[in-house]
Image (cartoon, rainbow, N blue to C red; front, side):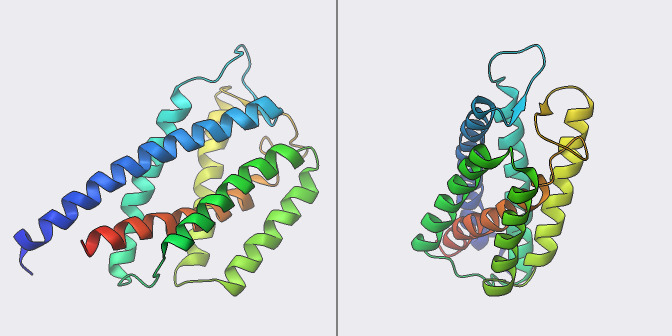
Amino acid sequence: MNDSASRPGRSLSQVRLILGSLAGGVAGYLGEVVHHWAGVWEMPGTSGQPPWIFAVYAAVLYVAGWCFFAVERRLAFPLAPTLRTYLIEGAGMVVLFLGVAAAYRQEVALALGLLAWLGVRLVRFRAPGDVLLALFTAGLDYALESGLAAAGLYEYRVAAWTVLPLWLAPFWACMGLGLRRLYVLTTVTSATT
């Protein structure tokens, strides 16, 4: 493989990954503003939204994007997303965030609804690696949020059985599948540029 021939694509891919992570950081921050405003979670001793939430989202999305790119290259890009896919996945993420803000008080019903949506995605629209990705994303978020909640940085207002609500794992499993498709669009486009 000619390494110099692949550098421009990598460079463009890196720029797109950084810009996508920053945009995702803003989107995640705004989503958390909506969740905080709706009462999904609260931060003891604060009244506003701290800026570190943006940094956490941007950093996690950068690492996730880098991992997605590495995995998709190894799988030889099994997904072929289009602009339509990008718009649908982006809208789906907005609906997920707003749905949680609207229904978080019904913890079990929301968890079952998200599990049903996750099941539909995995049965009807599954790509190679999706099941593992959904499990990994849900587990990674659960570990990260458990640590942040245990450190007292925030708490969920409705979490009947654990420190985290039941709907959180299927929520992030669905988000992981959407993020994969959004990042694949970026990496496939930049790999062919």
